[in-house]
Image 1 (cartoon, helix red, strand yellow):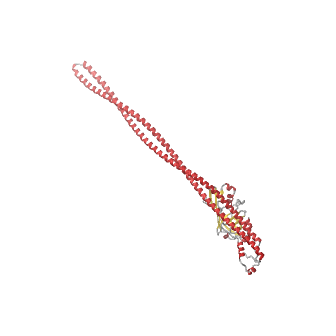
Image 2: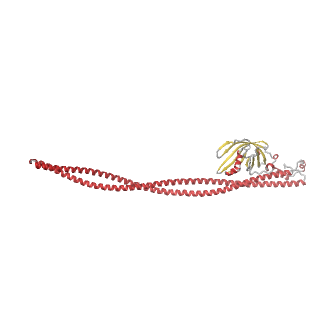
Image 3: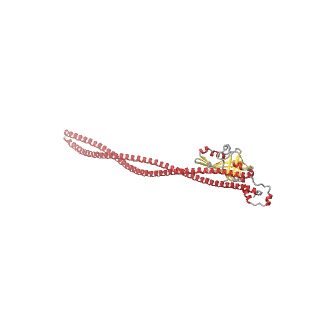
Length: 482
């Protein structure tokens, strides 16, 4: 408002877009009660981010929005938004034109979001803006809803034209002819000097406000930088611990693999032993079965031999009985039959004796083989039990290794996540640090500009004093064009 009151449009009206061309920084008031009612996307975003609700939701504008005005009237507003850990860069395109002196019409075009990678038309009405202050460095605009937009050209110092003309007039010699020709010109009076000093004072107040904003933002950035430095230290500690845990999981997994390999070798050797015992048992079982079959055959043969022996003895007895009661001439036949039967009986008895001996030997061998079979069966069962134990241990070890591999993958994933988070925080730290440096540079620039304007105000006061002294001693007329 101080700038509005100090500005006189008749001394510097906005007549052409070339006066507004270039890049401006937006310095709108921190709170505007009409911002939400403007219907303009930019002002609504400003009001949201600068409100208490926006601060509660960790919404902020890291840097001041930049407005680029081109000679053809096309404009581009760049805004960097951040809410929590997320951020976006938005560009608003529009077209402006000078409707009449100090009156501007702005027609919205489109809105582009870098995060969404999307461009949409700006669905809002044309704004009618009125220039209430302009000196080439500061631009104040108001619309029909009393929404105020303040723009500032950073690093642009505009010295007052009136001071330049007045200093030129003070320093340039004036001839007597010129003095007579310009009798109608009047030296600037007290009102002129008060307006000049008032305008400079208003600019100082505006720049002080901008300086306070820059200092506050630099302080906020410094606090955030300190917080991020602590977060980086915390994440580095956690990441180092996660790295050590991952290395521990790797060492443990290697040891478990080594033990599992040894256990697998032992299980394989035990499997071979068990297989050998099974083969030996199967072979003995076959031998025992063969011996039992041979024993049965031998017993059957022995039974036949015994039956033949009985039969032959009965035949011999019958032959003896018949020979004793038969005629003498039949005795030779009976004797011959008795002799053959006795010979055959002797052979049968020899076969019975051999069969009995073979049966005894066979039974002894069968008993020995059966003892061997029982012994090897017991050993095979023990080997099978040992093999089952080793295989169960190996299966348990494999499950432990699978669980350890899962823990290792989780540790590596956690380590990668921590590294990614740490890298993001480091990038954020670098961004905040760079932003803080920018704000501090802007603080220095604004302080320098305030010093220049204060120097201009002092110069204006000195010129006012000099003008008063000159007006009392001479009638020399003021020549503003000098």
